[in-house]
Length: 207
Image (tube, rainbow, N blue to C red; front, side, top):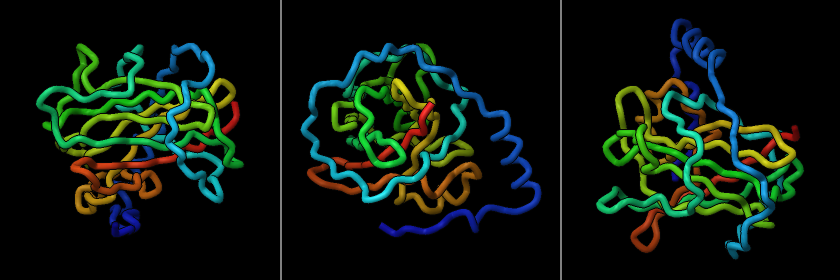
């Protein structure tokens, strides 16, 4: 995959001021899920990175978050879009796993529409002892003003709540036009067995 910094494509001046205003007013609804310990071992055998950042960058929740989504790993719907598996690790800044962390995922459908009355393409789960999580879903579509993206909230029992978004590395032009896109929030992405396979590891700061 081509890795390119998009920040240079952002306009200075008015656009930069608008972005600052947007972020300063970003909200983040707290999670209401009970921390009950790690999930069953998923046997994903994901290698931990050699080094971790101080914490994954946060982004706005947006207007379409719905609390109390079902606990489930599969978000796929009949007749949905291109299938995708999203997996990764939840880690501390020194790259230790965070077992039992909640990972709450929501996104629009293949036509760019959010379900704001039910729970289509919404769900949460908890990491296993290795800090691993796994979702089966689809690639979300494009809607006006935004590049396709996933929304997530991630939190461990003893960490701060992270609210953020993830982006696709193969949508370079759409990413460049989205003024809140951040290069460091791109997923690793590949195609195998007729399914898109994405990975992103979250690093959570202590509470």
